[in-house]
Length: 271
Image (cartoon, rainbow, N blue to C red):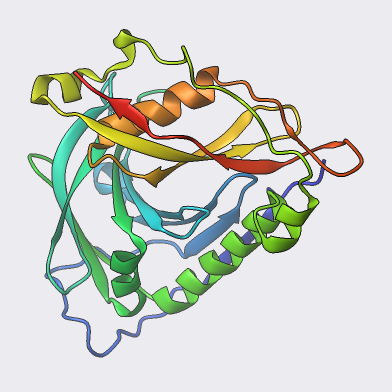
């Protein structure tokens, strides 16, 4: 099966700033260039900052439908065993936008990850931004130097177009799908799946997810299509779906299994 995984582009670091973007105080300088990675299920742009105990990585990830972006701030420290929900904000220089975020550890829990999710309209402010401030209530408060953001986001846009083509999400791909992928969420979730963070806060909501389904019916990728407003619920929804859902793959006109996408019905979290 052809893959996109080998394709990667490095963006050189330029020192210019852009007019019209209010500067944030004391930005941390990058230590390496931007790297854009074309993976099979997502497009990522990452960059390293600082060194030693102060080292961190900023990662920008657009959703395949272009509606939202994830900003991930990771640090080489021991992360929590279970994901927790925190308050924070993102500021590209025009004032902070408040947002709930998820805090969790990496696979080996030796990495602290803070994942913000912002709408595409908010990410558009970063196109000409000289820096970004990511603040976590009771946690990191960092301002990072940004460069060549217009070119970077253009590269991510092109990657996303290619991603849609790869998963038959563009017009030509949708025309190739003769039979849609099928699956059921009935019985997939249990009471034990309700995130403890959301339970403690009395949080409820409904989420919908965009799924990338491979030729074997596996859920290869899961993205928030409609957010509940509670990151813990959205994060658990994708986790359960990827771990447990098995689908019948889509078929082309000749009856061959092909890659495709699907949007789930609303998943309601009610206490």
